[in-house]
Length: 472
Image (cartoon, rainbow, N blue to C red; front, top):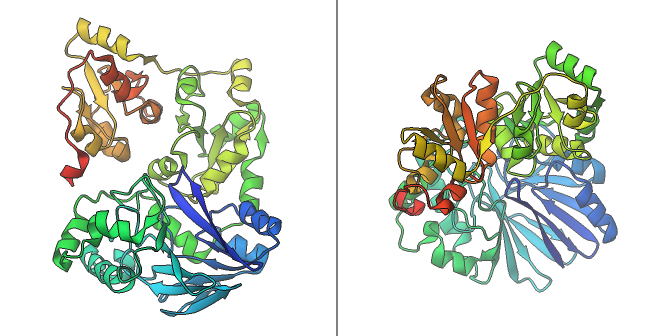
């Protein structure tokens, strides 16, 4: 028996490959399927099933392309209503894979069709639980995403989740390994661990949601407290996963079309395409195409695209480092942004050499910020981290304008004043500045290294630290 977790840090997402006696199953696959197909081929196995734990909201699954490529059967838990051929399993249904079995456990709460998959080895011993978004390491799935579709409140769903955990999961052996669909950084929960697996026994001891003495009322209160609004692309991804989508091959073909400088400029002027520059933030600051937006590929790229580009059908023109356009298009497609229409051939260097107009953003060090502050104690410092990060500790006098809610946050920024903008490390501040600069805000200065550099400099008054978990 082979069990492999295929973890994608950008999405904080875990897919799983399981194999026994030449038969394999993939659980919650990503949009691009070649790695699964190639893995099975190397192992001399045939992919028999594609198990989905639920209709994912934070990424587009590869279930359709994988089933088409391999002939595998797509399997969902009870009550799922996809618009394509799939096997809707019954609660307790058992699937055979070589010499092992996988049992469906219906666990509604995160969504109504949510299911966990219980793996038993060749001797019939329960060894693994693929828990989807029902149970994470340190947390459980948020109960507010499936309200409208099922005419339920988040409290109703939380109550169902409480029952699912206690009737289906907590009675299982403590030695069982929990394999969740997400880890820290995912918006599908609020307090996930950086660990990506754990024993169920340890989770019973440490996960607040599995306390044996917790009443349903206490659970509902704790699991719904501190929830922030989900990213706006979540329901759109659910729709794609439920109804179907364009083949990833077609998306890649369209998005990786090279455009000369003149063709790129014409496309930008003649369409409503967004210019998305995916280079390193500090490289971007030194020169970029006017009105382009920076979301660096070497960061939480896909989630920020989903959070900040409101229309999932938005046409996108790509500026990328050499050799990386396909990676950019792939990672856009992971969250359902399938309308990349091409990339700038030769990258920004080609644009610069052509003599066309360019723009820059001023970026200074924490020490330079200290000098500016000494010259003018009333300088405007803008902290674009999450509210919880700001509340934990911040520069005294700084204004919190979270990138997560940029349309609201920008209302706090006076165009006529100079603002020194920072996040935690420099990634989000450049996103924030690039978006506002495209909207006519020209007096924003980036602080390299973000809050970490500011704090480490020892030249600023910082509020006393408050542990974020105490604020939930």
